[in-house]
Image (cartoon, rainbow, N blue to C red; front, top):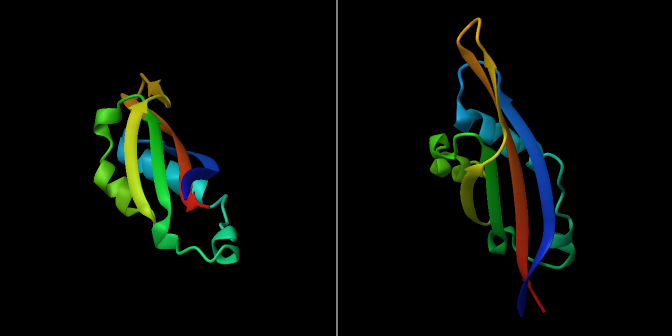
Length: 113
């Protein structure tokens, strides 16, 4: 058996007021998840719990993302999450406010013959 990436799904999320990097990251993950249907799991008789799910979050301040909270938001599989520098911060100087835009990439890998 060989571990193969079978899907890569992308999403974006934001926190328009408050500068919450975790909130933006979770919204990006949910956006990516809502673009996917893994019907192949049933077709191949693979348990969802056996998926290897690798999540990469891009934000301007990766150290501000609560990795455990993002990890807990994924419903299936053995999940790993990492945050890297990416995304976008949009400053509103008049209001001392930052809109945070996050990107998420979710890769699903399976052990296939």
